[in-house]
Length: 113
Image (cartoon, rainbow, N blue to C red; front, side):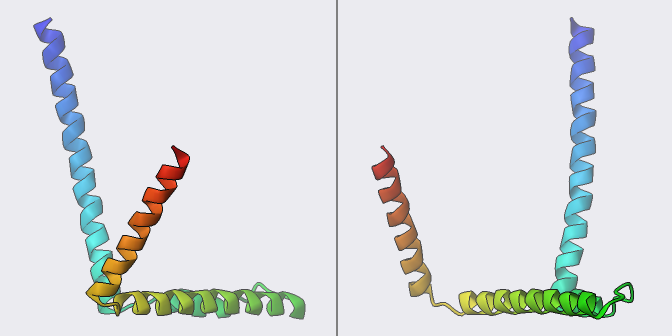
């Protein structure tokens, strides 16, 4: 019984060490990517570099590809504008939004039950 317990405990310890090591490596990678994004954001380049797609043969394919990229760029611009607008809110505005959300959630739960 002691041997079984020690093997189980040892195996669980090894698995925990392995998982924590992998988790730490993923966290370091994520932190580096986030820091790189903060230092030099490249949000638009992945879409703009897609403009040069030489696989498109017909004019219709190129037009559809251009429309799709225009939609993606428009969505990216709207997301960036939204983030800037949300970041410029005052503490009072954030508190009011939180209060409204909590009130709505409470009323929703009250109606369900």
